Image (cartoon, rainbow, N blue to C red; front, side, top):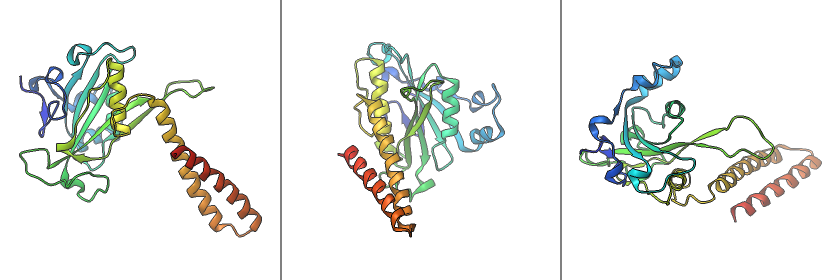
Length: 254
């Protein structure tokens, strides 16, 4: 069996076992199937038409394909390859696909030509190489995760799309960690979001990450307000808030 691939990215190059790879003959997904029924906005259709070169099913992770126990929440994980013509990861397209396939967890492998953004400071590796390997490609991993419901809040569950940094295609690898499919999904989430494979306490780590981002933004604003304030009383009031925010940030980062 020849494993599905696009521009030399495949389940096997990602480090996944051959047992979960989709045969190439069955892997290609027509773009139209995602935006014809149900119909989508003109803007989203244009994203599919202009930004996406191809969509491929690379692998299907199930208990019987990766030899793990069934999960309580995760029943299958699709690994889907997206070859794009645009610089940034096509978040709008991925969110639409995830919505259509809500019964499955999906890990997207986005691939773009290295020349699309050779000066991207977030890109790891040189982005150069020959057409015989993945070095002329850059890859980013992406997935959508359901956010934990905050205490005292009700309503529909919220989701967040996470996209990793771009990296040389030769370095794009996935680790299969855990005894159940739930564990595997948590580990994949950690690999995309935190660049490690530890899927334990992920909600706690995400909450801490969000708190750090919020405090960082608050400190930036307070520093600007402090610099602009001319009244000494106002400056002192802002300084107290700034000092408190910096202390909270230091405690979170320690």
